[in-house]
View 1 (cartoon, rainbow, N blue to C red):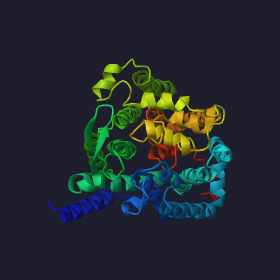
View 2 (tube, helix red, strand yellow):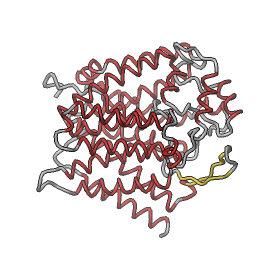
View 3 (spheres, helix red, strand yellow):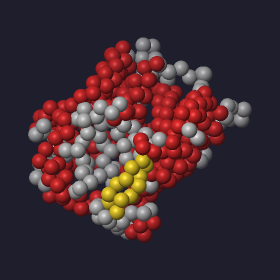
View 4 (cartoon, rainbow, N blue to C red):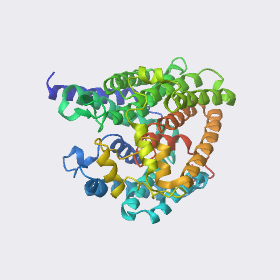
Length: 445
């Protein structure tokens, strides 16, 4: 099929998915397009990359400077989000008061900018991270938060996943490449779709594929006579996501998808979501399996069956090297400052694949924020898990996705660093743990 014809066909497919999922009863604010744009950029490629004006990251200095063009775009979206929250002043204030642990964590991140060797760069990155909270609040302070979450995830899934399939099949120059595996000395083909790498494509399928799987379960459980068109739309997206998983060969994301999907399926069984013991057991089983398989080497056969070696593709050596470098154990190097300057140059001299993260979210927090940051993150996770238990009792439908996203974030960060600005897994985690307080006045409503 010619590229132009394929593009038109896929555009019609996306339009059809939107129409099939359209719910005339729900009304969400047009401001929802702001977080849709923010999430879409974070989950795919920087705007400068799409327009070919990116400065590149071939050197540590270029990585340090970043792209002024992308900063301009994200700053504009952040400003628009803040304007929306100012217009929803009382409701936004209620949310902030109800989510104190998250604010405490982000405030500590802001303070840590002060002891960074690159305070200006750290502050810019913290601003982007704060933008994640702003975007989540724009979604959850909508007059119908549940509908807004569904619309956010559906709009993003309907765009990113079909376009990834289109690019891989018909625009290989934009969505395929080769990587040199230095530990084996071979060149290996990989696909990126709409993202920047196979792991990035994996977490796109993970976050938005899970959202569509959740919606498909919801549609199947709908009362007799209810509209079934959303079931067709979201089943189609799940099928596309599974094809992309197969093409991308992203083991971490696929394993997390299976864990999250299993939790959604289990919690969809009648009455189970209201039983805390069952929730604890399901969560504990998933986390213990992941820890024992990935970190304790008790599941060597499982790791190898997924096409990976017991060093997790060189990650364990990187972890040892990062921990050997000088950093304040209590406060860290400062917000997102460890992978900058001389430390980054040293690591890039040793590792030709130029890592810019620890490939472990908890280690990444320790390197940047020290034990204090790890403790505050632990507080957020414990507090967030308690919120999930309440959500499962009061709103089981939404609680299933929140539980799945929480589990996915906890497991994903064992082998990838996703606790960072605009990362879809981190955004999904924030959506999962935030408290949505009941309106306390007609103005809030």
